[in-house]
Length: 427
Ligand SMILES: *[C@@H]1O[C@H](CO)[C@@H](O)[C@H](O)[C@H]1NC(C)=O
Ligand SMILES: *[C@@H]1O[C@H](CO)[C@@H](O)[C@H](O)[C@H]1NC(C)=O
Ligand SMILES: *[C@@H]1O[C@H](CO)[C@@H](O)[C@H](O)[C@H]1NC(C)=O
Ligand SMILES: *[C@@H]1O[C@H](CO)[C@@H](O)[C@H](O)[C@H]1NC(C)=O
Image (cartoon, rainbow, N blue to C red; front, side):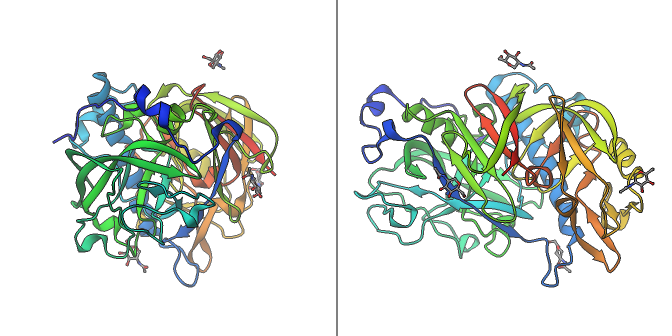
């Protein structure tokens, strides 16, 4: 069953009292440091290619589930959901996959804020002060916020739980997200005060009573997940967290920026952190405001460029770059020593570990190179390494998914106001 019907968010009455703790007028933006957790690396830094393949499948499934939600919310078939793909997909209520190979997460706070806000570590919730704040995975490939709830069973062990306090309103609406492995995340929807990097909004969120195996603490170090795409992808059909912050903090610039790199990763809310990039942004318009979907102009391998003009979904919740099998095969043919590796799954390739073929993706006429060190995901054997690009038949001719293998090489601006994505060179 699908979860919910729409409910009105931010009323004018709320805006009048929004967030007394933060001087929004003087605020230009706020940074949240974020951490990265590699679950696909073994202790010896070899790569678990099986896990990577699971992750590709899960990422593709997540995008397809977004198409279902879009159709429920808007009454129209998503333009990228072709008849063939639609008939292959399960119908129903699920939004998120156990997208667990590489996570980008940071803390937020939920509940009635305490008087002093001096930093993330000092935010308290009523009735119980909490010393540990829930950490969420920031996912631009989905649009809902959920956390482990107070009544969560053993499946949430090890995670910080959301304790609804005086500011919480139980909406009495259940939700269930089903996952590829047959397990589910389910619970009850609340509306509560959510504080992210000092910005506060009343927000719809899920308090889970069960977590799927993919969210078990050993596989998913964050506590919950915060979707950062558009409302048409919200399984709650509610305003996603960043959009709520925008509506309820008028001074907040409707842009957020990500630096996802080996060190110094950061999510910036309310603009972009100009000490983290150089030069101008190359902007690409969102072609359908559901996912962060833009046109991928093409790619360049070893000085040869190829035009593709396909939809690309920019997804911080996906590790690799995922494309259609034929194009991906043609790219690996231009990489000396690259080999198809069906032993790890369809569409998986290995590259020589000293791989240094220039490879980049082209957006709005500008090619952004992927550092060979980012493209190389680690050893599958002493002399073969896993390539950061995979083919998947379920993305077919319709779209690519552009994940961290690319995003780690650029500073990315997600412009909600103008519905566009910008890429700039990392400082
Ligand atoms: C921008 O990034 C720099 C470098 O990481 C950091 O020191 C600074 O605090 C960030 N700016 C803001 C306004 O948060
Ligand atoms: C690789 O990941 C899979 C899927 O999570 C897991 O079942 C398997 O034990 C892992 N293998 C190794 C050798 O780490
Ligand atoms: C992007 O969208 C803006 C606003 O709708 C429009 O003015 C501009 O021409 C578009 N750019 C391209 C390259 O289509
Ligand atoms: C680039 O292409 C040339 C010609 O096919 C090939 O000889 C060379 O090895 C390639 N270089 C790299 C770094 O892949």
